[in-house]
Image 1 (tube, rainbow, N blue to C red):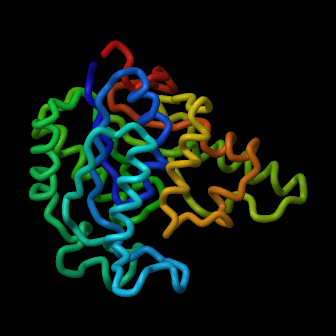
Image 2: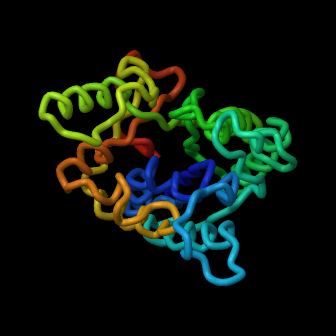
Length: 259
C-alpha cells in the first residue's frame, strides 16, 4: 500500500480535478489524503442557501468532508489560509490569503503532512494553475517546494488538455451548439507537454457524486452536472498530469503504478 496526497486550492477542486485518481487509488488499497489550502470563503452562492448565522467557509468544509467520503479519502486537512479571490481582485493581497503567503512558510505546513504520511505521490497543479487562478498558481509553487522539503518521490502537476478543449469547442460550433467550451479562455497545457493520461471513465458516477456534495458551488443546473452523460464523460473521463523528467508525450497512465 502506498500513500497519495492531493493538494488543492479550494473545496470542490478535488472532485473536478482529481476525483477519479483519488477513488481509483483508494479502491486499489492505497491511502488517500486530501489537503486544501483554503476554505473557499470567496465562493459565490445562491441567495438563501446558507442557514441563519451559517458562514460559507463552514458549509464548504462540511461539503469537503462529504465529498471526501465519496472519494475514499482517509484524511482531510486544511492549511488555514484565506481564499484569495480571482486574479486581479483587491482581496488577492489581503491579510492571511494564500496568494500572499510566503511560499516557504506554506510549503513547510504541507511538508509536515507529507512527512507524517510518508507520502509516495503528491498531486498539485501546473505552473499556470490550470486556468490562472492565484490560489491555483500558489498550489503549484507551494506544492513543488513542499515535495522538495519532504523528499516526496513522485509529484504530478494536474492540468487539462488545451488542444482537446479547443477541438471540442470547434466541434460544438460546427454542430451549431451553444454553451460549449470557450475557445478564448486559456486552460491547461498543450497536449505535447502532458506526460500522464489517466482513464477514469469507471469513476464518472463517483466524480458526479463528489461534485454534487459541493452543493454551495455546484448546482444541478451548473455546467458540471447539467452535461449529458456522453459529454460529461468526454469532459471528465480523463485526468491529465505533468511529471517532470517524463515525456515527451504521454508515458504514464497510472499515478500509483509499481507502488
